[in-house]
Length: 442
Image (cartoon, rainbow, N blue to C red; front, side):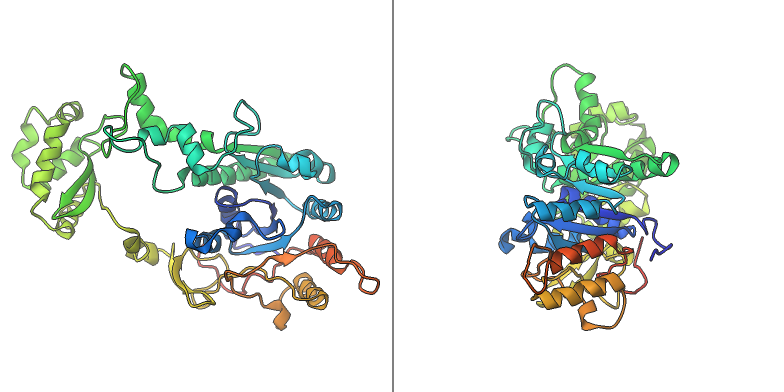
């Protein structure tokens, strides 16, 4: 059953992704209405298996709502056959294993294209499927190092540092999503499938626009500039203190600068030759910085923010994470909301597409406890809807498991679970893992 309220309704995605990069891409697809079937190896994808003290539970809950999960051992011939039957029903197959792994497993683009000629097959990796670095193992911090992020982060007197967030993973996830969406438009127009190859290194490269501008417009390689503009071409641009609480300012043009002078009560400086143009202000960057620091040092940050926002000067409070999760704008716009999981842990998460504010359950599949339970469970999946307890999916917990599709055989029951996977491959795509509720956002 399709739901016209969601732009990707009716699109089935077979998802072999793990950790952050690929799961963020398929999270965006699920949010837009796609039927995402997450295929996990025995024991679950790597993020499930991280030590809970490493913060694995929260990101898994954040990136994997509204996905149906099954376990397939793709090293096993029978499970590989099930995967290909499932892929034959899909619009998109997506993975972010190291280059070459899916081909060795027999589930790469060529294998899937044989059973589904119009498939959109997408691969995310650190450095791409070909090229000198294709065989390099890549995680976010490695790509931050190789991609130049670390060399441009921090202060010049200190060693390079990584960015505080996994930006290469998430930049690439957005590019992976965009590549798949572009391929879907192409298929809609031509009927042809596509192979999408996204590299984390390439995804982050355009973010160096300012830094590269400085390098090509000057002699030598630019060093780290701390909180100044990466191209040293905008002033003021930086982080300042208001009675010990930090805030940022950027004046991207003369209008912003004049507004800032008015807010500071320094209107007489508008005609000061040191500050009249952006080039003048950049030339006198330290003087500009000291001027703002002296003004704000005796003021409360809340007062500073009120004055600057009233004057329409681009600025921002430097917030700690505990402030971010309570941010009134994020909550008012529905980006995050507070939930309590089955174990009583409270956290702030983005809303799942089909979970209403009145039913804050983040769900995933659980492992059937027996062959009989599995039979009932998958029959309910095939039917969709209904009031049976087998049609209710448990809230995600630290011990939650994806539904296991294995080669369990016996003389009496036969290959029931394998057949169950084949049934889901042939089903209309309606998932019992989605509540019948109005979406919070699309």
